[in-house]
Image (cartoon, rainbow, N blue to C red; front, side):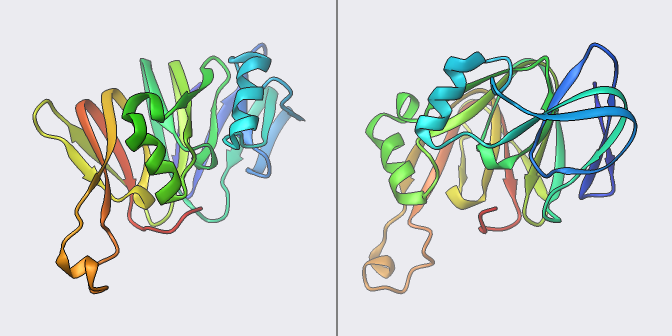
Length: 216
């Protein structure tokens, strides 16, 4: 159930009988055909346990189940939209960045501290992003949102990528993350750029960053 990008701020999705997709509530712009929209109770293929975990973590985003026979236009807040195709791998994405995704994808939650240890927990405290990140796994399409456009940066062995945590959107692949510091004497006297903390991603994969440090 691929998405078709309409400009840079909307996507069109084909809904077929017997299939379903999920979208952020309020993201439907227009539709054609016999399509229904109902609040999601189970929060995707992850089931009720996954939903409860995300809500306790404050990581859940209100979702709608989209079913029927027709086409739907999705967009939200005038944000830039990027389509990510998954081929059996896992996408790690902040919950509020999700616009819409295939119902065949399994949705879950990852505790960032399990990858970064104490530093992963510090990341959540310092950057304002949750300690938990939503995961989408399997074969299908995901539409994510960002401010000012999305840039894809490859991550290769021995060549880690450092990202401003506020610009981070999502990543996929065999990737580890940790919070690194770049604190110098200029930061100590209040003349630094304010970017003393960086999210370091290493391994093999790809990270998506937005052209802005503004949160959605």
